[in-house]
Amino acid sequence: MSEPVGRAVLIAGPTASGKSGLALALAERLGGEIVNADSMQVYREMRVLTARPSAADEARVPHHLYGVTAAAAPLSAGRWAVLAAAKMREIAARGRVPVVVGGTGLYFRALVEGLAPIPPIPDDIRAAVRAEVADAGPHAHALLAEADPALAAGIRPSDRQRIARGIEVARATGRPLSAWQQIPPEPLVSGTFAKIMLMPDRAWLQARCDFRFDLMLEEGALEEAAAMAALGLDPLLPAMKALGLRPLIGHLAGEIGLEEAATAGKAETRAYAKRQETWLRTQMIAWNAFSAQDSESLMAKILPFIDDLGLTRS
Image (cartoon, rainbow, N blue to C red; front, top):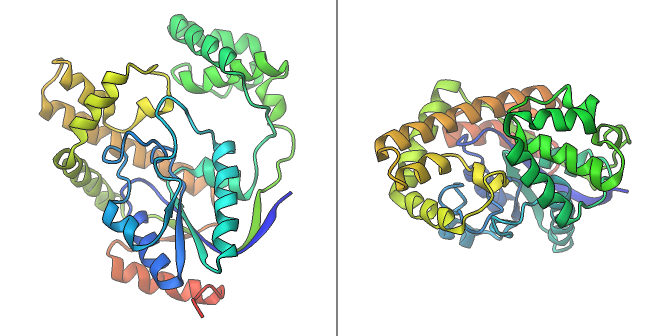
């Protein structure tokens, strides 16, 4: 059952769209605290590679759920939603406004719409399935088709992460994931929410993706990639899908040059931003989209919307 948290601001959008800067400005104006809703920024080993807010920004207003788990310990959307809901209640209890920001649409869906009540998967089953999927390679999709035909019909054969998830749920619970997904979900929180979706011009966004990747290289992305490679993690882990991580590891291994790695990392980032745009537009149609690129124009558009909802600090 959902629990009321009063007023809150929710900010979604593709990578590099300016979400973090907007969240910081609104949190300062509203007397708020920021809650992370980015599935990569939860990993403590990758501050630079995941473009987490800087230490200086974190000092301006309280930030929550950044760097809260190890790269070897994935944080599911359901688990994140439980943590985020608790943080939102804590913030509201202090008389402040939760500002939830990130690019992971499934996190927001889990929080305000709910997810199927799937039981936790035992670690041994998860590890065994991930190893089996890795060994099966292109034949892994056939394993999912045996365990959950309905789910397999909607998953690409190349999407090993979702394939493994479907198999592990079926084996651990004795019930296909597609059947669990038919159970009506319940949201974890309720209240007056300003649902903001940033949708800047695509050409501007792609240029921003390239600029930010160059900046990350200057700030230590290559060193973080080396540290991640040294961990020897399962390549199926979500953390290993951080944008640009694999090309940078390839460069460190002597497989490609740094310029080629940077080009590949930028291409990954632009492609991901485009996929996010598509998902957000089609799956979060009730959210309010704003397209201004510069911060002053964006705030000029958003503040009246915030005021109309009664979220302005009194």
